[in-house]
Length: 174
Figure (cartoon, rainbow, N blue to C red):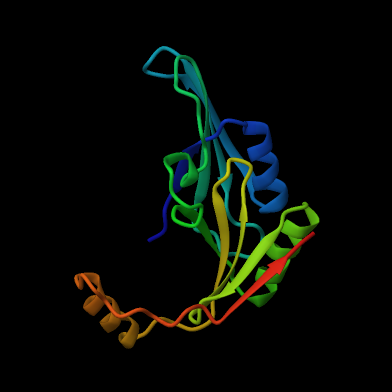
């Protein structure tokens, strides 16, 4: 079962809208504008994550808050003192063609990207205008019983064995 949507606050709805429609290829699906319980108001903006390749996992939504709220620092990781790779958004690339189109879309929109081969999937990463790391992930093999056994062994182990590092790293610039 997929998510219906993930919702995040944004300090700049215009830049966020441009990134998720232009660089990601998502379509604006819905906006809800209402008062908030605290006496302000908000726009809740929904984007369909199907960028035309049938790999939709639902929607992503953003809040533009108006009222007596703290400053929105939209970077999911760095705003709380973590490296940007910790909390991130990963979207499914349906196939190799989709993966290449997604990378081209980012480069054409002026976004640098890093590509990593994780062995079981390949990923490209860039940052959205809020400072959140965004990923397109292409599965390169199905997960199997050995993967599940390894997960079961390592999850409760306070000193697990390290896995092999990623197989490859490549930077892409516009």
